[in-house]
Length: 142
Image (cartoon, rainbow, N blue to C red; front, side, top):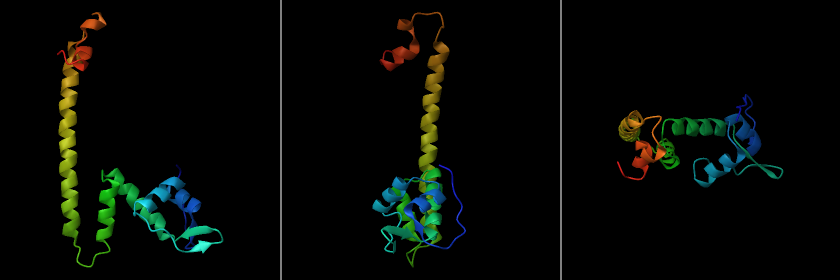
């Protein structure tokens, strides 16, 4: 979804907020339900309006997702900003755990890649499919 720019400090309708942040309206609603963004109290006629800062909050959520954090983890990280006693070390611990989790996923994918590469290398293009090592591996026969 293309991202619109907002230079205005005026409140935004949900549609304008979604456009500015490059997300769908349903995403904004979902994030509200999950407690990632606050449900606005202010209204413009029949429409709820969001403060312009909500664009930055949505952008931060998207960036954290791109770094591999789940929505629940993101909510916890964003809540740390509001705690008086929270320190960067609190965030660091969570970031270090995420790095370790990503490293394990990479190792698992490398194991899968090696196994699939070995199966593919064992394939003979002209052999019948019934003798294909890849298909045999699917059936647990290898």
